[in-house]
Image (cartoon, rainbow, N blue to C red; front, top):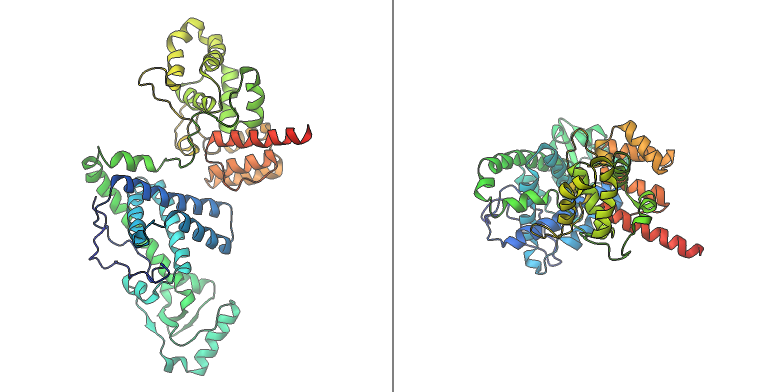
Length: 456
């Protein structure tokens, strides 16, 4: 696949001896490289782990210093290539692949733009970037403050006053730039810069404040253009090769598939009501309760709950007995055997292509679109605030924790809302976050078994 043209202007300078580039890539032009299909997907997944880690850190309200450490650790763990000389290629390839993935809707573009901008901001601080090269490439007009101008005692005193007022290092000759004050609205608004005759005097440590908005603006426009190319040409041309990968990556789940619970073995029909109350996440509790009340679920609900139950250890024979006991109360045993039993066996890989289907991840559930009469999907996204409050209250979430959960759901941090629910009900922290309903179940069972052992 064409990914990068090394002759383009945005070719970063060579790496330093410690492996840190002197100039960050700005991803201005799509590159031209031969990329193996497995690397195309693997590099994108590695970068996606970084971006989702950043998203989780921001949603949890981590402080700037903690975010800086998080970004550094995520990048080091996921974006280093076994061959150091290939670090840059991996960086560029992964960005442009994910640009294809996340250009395809306004919601996807908004998330990708925010996470890539945050990543760039922290990498700008962490890596030994060439500020002048970046400003030149971004087309930012600036002047380096000369030693003669810096020698003006009145100017130097004003600069020192601003630096001391915002706890910044005092400016030094050669480390100070003049830019139009219109280019640094963030610094002007927070009174972190000295302005004189229409120019803002910016220290090296403040350059990030006006480089990042330029980066964000370019990427925002580029995502729109990429979407036009994707829909008009690339998608159809690559329908048999790249399109399936690109369209799957946005909803990809990067953890264990939970095809069958290996740690806790089987769950029996006599225990299912108890474990549903104590260890099912809200999405599965809602489906389970709806099934018990209505004795029926539509296809989407049967798939979401059925595969979850399979993953937590419900064997095929018990699954057939469980669903038949409920459905027969509404449709009769004969109709169940004729219309519904096949689908259950199919989920367990015993019919059709005999595919061993795995439970749905949070990402897939969140992006589903339940219709009228459906009960599947993510309650944190699809419930009204009133219904969500009632459901969480029925689970036993305290009023204090409930407000935080509702706030996260309102701000569309649905998985974090589920994580906070888990933490509130189990009186523990879950730093990894909840990314899969079966993960919720496994972690819950682990905690409950440890408590039972300690009190035995």
